[in-house]
Amino acid sequence: MTWEAYCAAWARLHGGFDPRAASAVVRGWVRVAYRMGSWLGARRVAPSAVTTAGLVLCWCVPLVAALGRAPAALGAALVLLAALADGLDGAVAVVSGRASRLGYVYDSVADRLGEVAWLLAFWLVGAPGWLVVAAGTVSWLQEYARARATAAGMAELGVVTVAERPTRVLVAIFGLLAAAVVPIATTVAAAVWLGLGLVGLAQLGVAIRRALAA
Image (cartoon, rainbow, N blue to C red; front, side, top):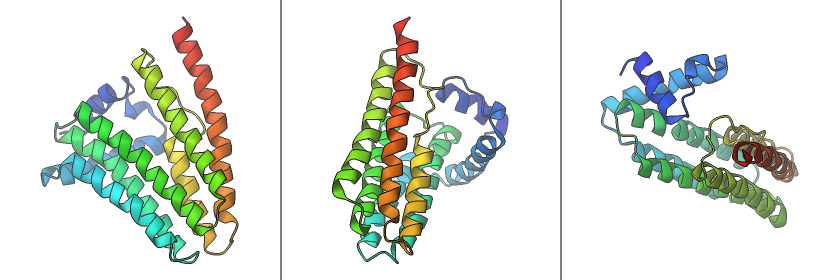
């Protein structure tokens, strides 16, 4: 699949948004995903296999974190690899013509389960349980509200908050990295996750009201 055809297919799956009109960072990431996805697709790697690999990497994070604060830095690298896999499964699906509604659902569920693993790692390294549970609950509520609003007819594209998945990825990475030298780092990271999640939930609520009230 050519780059132009990939952009057209990508746009159809993302509410008509053309990645070539995105910021340099987003455009660069989409192009990298296209190249790597093309390489994997040419070797007949299934999109679901990439999703599963990312989920396995996510659940390796708490296993590493259970070894102590110092090894938690390795967990940060695993989060980064898992995030990469999360971006590649969609690219493989597009370039191989294997995008499906079932795959979309599986990818979404895998994302939520992966985030549970990262928050579990926070707790294992020292973050309070109540704070970890609160952060996870807010994230799940945001994604649930988005899914229900989309089912009600709201276009998913454009509902961008300060607490989207890329933000959660960064919080997990830096939280686990810092935990190796600052004991309170995962507590701060969980608090940041929760704080941004509350703001993001409010932003999403406003967007849903505007979109569906008409």
